[in-house]
Amino acid sequence: MIDPGTTSSLQLIGRFLFVAAVALATLWILRHFVPGLAWASVLAIATWPLRERLLHQGMAPTWAAVTLTLITGLVIIVPLIVAAIGAAREVDLVIEWVHEFKHTGLGTPGWVYQLPLIGGYLGPWWQDHLGDPQAAKELLERLEALGLAQSSGVGRQLVARAIILGVTLLTLFFLYRDGPHVVEQMGTVSDRLLGFGARKLAAEAISTIRATVNGLVLVGLAEGALLGIAYALAGLRHPLLLGLATGIFAIIPFGAPVVLVGASIVLLAQAHVGGAIAILLFGAIVIFAADHFVRPAIIGMSTRVPFLWILLGIFGGLEAFGLVGLFIGPAIMAVALAMWREAVAPRENESGKLNVGR
Image (cartoon, rainbow, N blue to C red):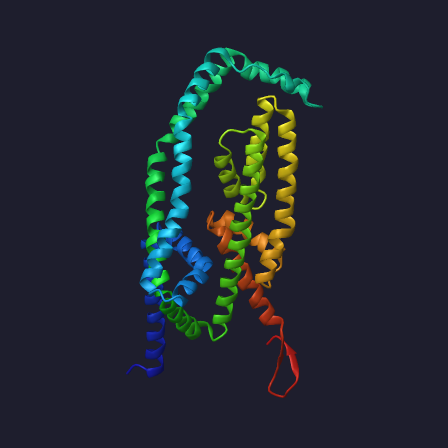
């Protein structure tokens, strides 16, 4: 006869293996949709107060979900449409510029030779590689070959991104509608698996995600708005698109200078040296204030996680998970820090004495 204890152990092992197999199979099936699910979760957490406000005003959960999903979709899609229209308007100018560059080269601007320290080296290099028509033609041919080699997967990538966007919005609708039930079920499962402290860790992660969204997205868009006004005053073409690009890059800490420096180079190429210097100085002040004062203050007011810890989570999450890692990374770091604080916090044992940890 089989020992009942052995049978119980075998059943426990069998259940564990079965659950693990089902979990792995589920992840494998959903592997291409995980980014969409992650984005939907981040967006739902960040905008959940808006849902609560709509419900407080008497709107039904389904209609609140429809409204917020439509607004989120418009916020994501409309800037893409505006950027596409702006790019389409510039196609003819780009083609004309490429044709001229291919046959006549790009003459060296006078200000290049006047640059301190590097002007004497940059001027001859520009003339040899960009000013000479033959060198310009060879450069364009290499770029065209590289573009053709990489363009084969562009259509496939666009379709994949569109599918992820659709999954994100569809999941976001159901999260808005059924979010409380999902949260309660997840809390029940986490209590059974990890104990009652799991809800506290989840709350820490949620507050960190919301604070990170406010600190990165809202501050980044504010940077883009301010610098977009500066671009317009400096006389740059399409300041709205440049401001939008600056805001998007500014979501990543220290990313806004990429667009800022590019705009300054354009002004230099147009011989607007004063405008280029003014844009650089103003942009540097805005970016420095946002990254060193505004963001730490916003994030620090909403979470107990030090800003350095958040910053490490942002960059580490970006490297590990892509753009959605900007928000997932800090949440993971917040959970890790909360677990550390729980482990080292003084606790009272059964005899009434204090112990550190357990």
